Image (tube, rainbow, N blue to C red; front, top):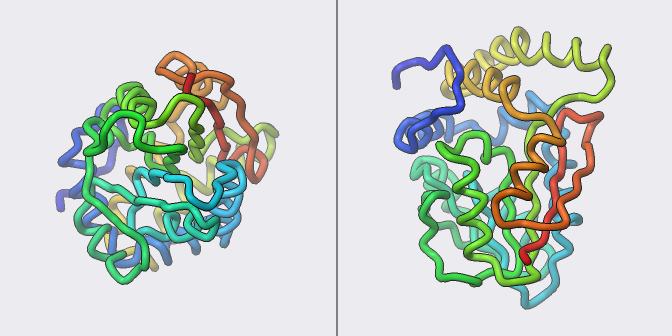
Length: 231
């Protein structure tokens, strides 16, 4: 894959799929190392925020290898993982959850199929995040829930400065030691820095088919959980 060294928010689906195909082999291990194990805490927080119940149907969009889908399935709900990267899906084929290929901009599901939908650390990698939010609303029943777990902006200024230094310098260096395609992590680091802050993302969610939008910071704002309801 051609190395990507500059991040922008105008990402074509085939470019994103190819990038994640290239990191699929060691993606989960790399995430755990780079986040100092916080990725596991964030997955549990996402499951708690969704408040899934046995018998409900949930879509885990941008599921990657399905590690998040497995976590959500612990609730007893029926959870389907979907991702645009065939390489990621192949890397997760050993998991005991259904994983399907799908584009966030044209989901292969009927209207009002799910009681809840979630996307973790993937919305910023979609070519058109606003259209993806509308598509998620389309496949969610009225009254259904949305939880977006995404990297965000640390709220304490001294910590934010240290975090950005780690993100732009240390993260690619660490990725070179553990990742199967470290060049992709330069792109990912820059995409995190360019992503909207918590209030801006909440406004976008509310403008694209969702109501009662609220958010909660995780790890001092390194990540944030945005919750909303389908009217």
